[in-house]
Length: 466
Ligand SMILES: Cc1cc2nc3c(=O)[nH]c(=O)nc-3n(C[C@H](O)[C@H](O)[C@H](O)COP(=O)(O)OP(=O)(O)OC[C@H]3O[C@@H](n4cnc5c(N)ncnc54)[C@H](O)[C@@H]3O)c2cc1C
Image 1 (tube, rainbow, N blue to C red):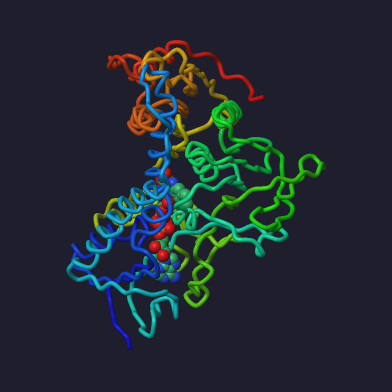
Image 2 (cartoon, protein in one colour; image 1 turned 90 degrees about the vertical axis):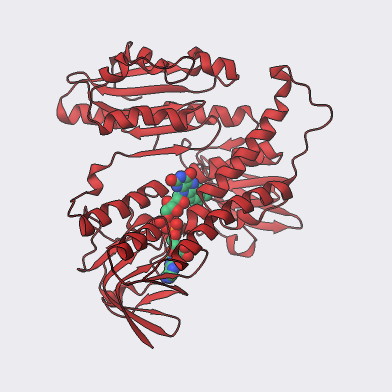
């Protein structure tokens, strides 16, 4: 069977539902194809479920700290993992059902359930049907990348997807990978009561951050009893009754740990290997990411790639922003571009890390490249009244600005409320206003944000990174 549409959208990630909404509102006849759960990673196995579980872990942590605040809990604090999972499932499924019913009830939109494959640059096959359209939007996302470690395929291991089914407390969770996903799950399960070991090949956690940020995060996790092994490679895995034997190598020294469960959090890969992209002539890079230009057009006219599969973002907000860019270009004559956006993201450990723009290392490189002097401000959370009141004084904030003109280059806020406070810096960056705008603004007391002007009052020339 063959059907014709104006547009085909493959995958229902963070860009697709809104893209379908905008196209149908403009009078286009649209087909949307989803092979798995509606809403993709963010809703089902990414942001929403993990942040829901982070909230449960925070509640457990605060219950254990209750005495610090003068509160006595009579009896033991019990983490009920079945209820933690049920709460997560309920919040996640509400969003999934919302996306599914939004698409199903959309006029001029036909939803297909099945795996999409290209037949040509204008045709896509789903189940036994051939769909044809002049415009095709690929929003297929990504999945956990599984490293080739000896013995891995002989044991049962977890990924961010199968972690969603965990409704028990792992005795000892070993996590391969010390980046965002590994750290969030690591602290969360430590707070639930598991023994947790994080194994990271590199010399520090979350290597894309500055060294002071990585070191502070390591300290936060170690204070809670997470065992962090840096410069450590997992070389072999084996099963021994209920244990997983994890063989490690650190600086040429062999060691072994026994865990009850293993989470592989060693990066992501795009879902582009099973799309038959070759039949459409769509080009990818060596890692499978679809090559796109600044307006998310692939090398084939009429085909766009949005979200994680284009390698330009890796976050829910970047995927949604991809939709905004493509919709503005196609339907509004507004030539928005990927290069207009400022890098921004959070790490949801507690306290969270909010990030915008350049790191200190990037700012140093920028200074060397342009000859412009860069200033840096630093402020510890121990000197933030709001943090003291909340009993949450771990972390620090820092900001990098150009000395001349005051352009803000980047900021990191690792501390209570950092995930929200970062936006006050981000918005001024988007406004292309100098840092003095924040410095002169009257901020509300008591907040973390009120110390940003104070930090900006104590800027110093940026030195070479260690
Ligand atoms: C554990 C974890 C935590 C995260 N936390 C955050 C966070 O806090 N904040 C944040 O911004 N980002 C976070 N992310 C990243 C975020 O989830 C993704 O960047 C986001 O979901 C964007 O995805 P997408 O739109 O590219 O597609 P996805 O959401 O991955 O969806 C792609 C969809 O396409 C479907 N599909 C794939 N191939 C086909 C095919 N051939 N035919 C039909 N359908 C197909 C899939 O089934 C899926 O539904 C997290 C990710 C993980 C794994």
